[in-house]
Length: 231
Image 1 (cartoon, one colour):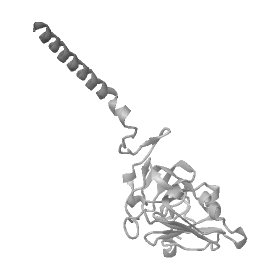
Image 2: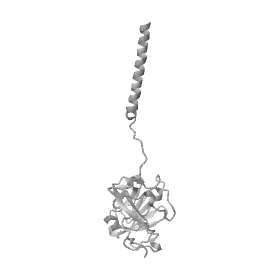
Image 3: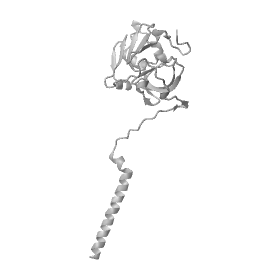
Image 4: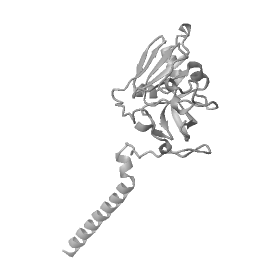
């Protein structure tokens, strides 16, 4: 009887040891072996890039004509129209599937403030080339239309020569609605009113004198930073 009692004790002790070891091993390796899905962490805004200090996305001032626009990305289409061989309507994901580029560019507002940001986006010339600009019909101007009715324009050659971006990220974060989601023009070396937000249409034209929202109210159509913005 004493021998049987000792055997039972050793058996119970052995089971306890095995369970403890199993629990320790599972806590160390179990989650990795049972799940192949990564955990999504909240993205952080970067404030430095290759030695350059960056502004915050919160440094921008709200000065749009109708307040922030909240675009339904499920129904959104980016139209490329006008003097092109093939008019296009691209979804948000189709645009993001194009080759992306990063560039640090400072936006200068006529109100007297500025913000240096790392922008990520696609080249406008890549999108326009997909539609095929009709050079034979004098396509020389690109008109940008926004979800709030805002418009502005830029020379076609300027977009190509300066590798101008249509941005969807700033400082490693997706554009916020108040910052132009889904897309904003990064009109490098131009005053801020050329940086169209909430872009819905890119229209090629042969009218270099086209005047957008602010241009029709006396602002310079060229909008070069080294010139005064008001004609």
